[in-house]
Amino acid sequence: MSTAKILILPGDGLGPEVSAEAEKVLVALRDHHGFDAEWSRALIGGAAYDATGVPLPDATLAAARASDAVLLAAVGGPQYDTIPRELRPERGLLGIRAALGLYANLRPALLFPELAAASSLKPELVADLDILIVRELTGGIYFGKRESKVETDYRVGEHVVASARVSRDTEAYSDFEIARIAKTGFEAARLRNKRLCSVDKANVLESSQLWREVVLEVARDYPDVELSHLYVDNAAMQLVRAPKQFDVIVTSNLFGDILSDIAAQLTGSIGMLPSASLNERGQGMYEPIHGSAPDIAGKNLANPLAMILSLAMLLRYSLKRGDLAEKVETAVKRVLGSGLRTGDIARTGEARVGTREMGGAVVAALKG
Ligand code: NAD
Image 1 (cartoon, helix red, strand yellow):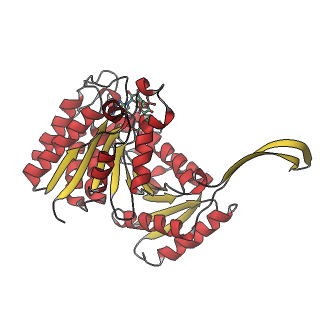
Image 2 (cartoon, protein in one colour):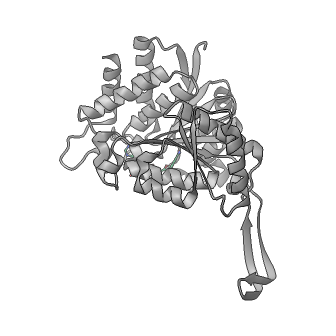
Image 3 (cartoon, protein in one colour):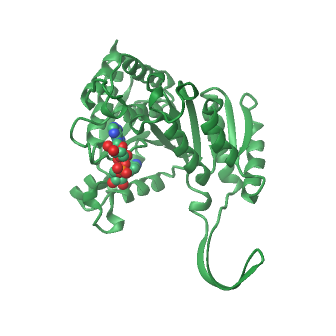
């Protein structure tokens, strides 16, 4: 690949602080590991609204389209709660996701053994947890046809309601959308432990039956990946019973929304979790799952590791530099192993470091 182009969108709240630490990591990769990349910054969210009057300026979108990958911190803050809805920071986020056609959401749940006590599950169930949830992001019930109306003689079992207010949402998937996300799941499994679990509700839902059929068709191209299927209710139960049984889970928009939050909670720390959203060209947007944390912004208290681990995902999935991603992840492991903790991952009595110190330690580990 020629020189990789990365766009950094610091956004709001703690965004600029954690972005600065990710940039330090990029500099270390360039200076010490021969990483051929250039990067620039652009405005999004409240910061863009303040400077330009809109949350997603055309210049930002153009820069994003011209990049191989986008690294975004977070947007939002209470000062924007009263402005018109279409100008709010989150509109910038939804706008860029839609404009780039990001249909696949990758949410890893990774628990470093040093942080096992932070989970709500017993340490032995979650230590070294490393699973990836691949969620379809642009189809299904969140985008299906909706309606609300009054219906007469509406049947509920034995009851007939003379006049009922009824709302419907539609779960619709085409074979095209299912095949596309299934391929993403299989490809991701190939980069990991080669096990894919497809989650559906094929015993009840028509759309899930198609889901299962198409996943089985796509599986023919991936004989090296072991495929299994679970109904979503069982998958939710298995995630809290024995989460380490999973490698990669692929599922629909609605099921993925719920399962990825369950998986995130298994790790116990919002400041540690990265995510990726990919389009068909492999271009992606990478972001921590946390928000802009206005309560701690600007105080050197934020944990920059979710942002740094988002950069690692960017290296692996958009730039195909799994070797550099591993270097970053190993550096993070070493820093945690040496006992460094920001406030969100420190236990009572443990010493705490700030955002800059944590980022600096990752950089030092990368150089060493
Ligand atoms: P939040 O994730 O910003 O914060 C929740 C809690 O986690 C807070 O106590 C915060 O201090 C802590 N926290 C979050 N990230 C942390 C980090 N890196 N290090 C240490 N502690 C961290 O969620 P919220 O408070 O519900 O939302 C705050 C703002 O962020 C809102 O405006 C919301 O709309 C926005 N938000 C944006 C995104 C996004 O940009 N993707 C996601 C969620 C929320």
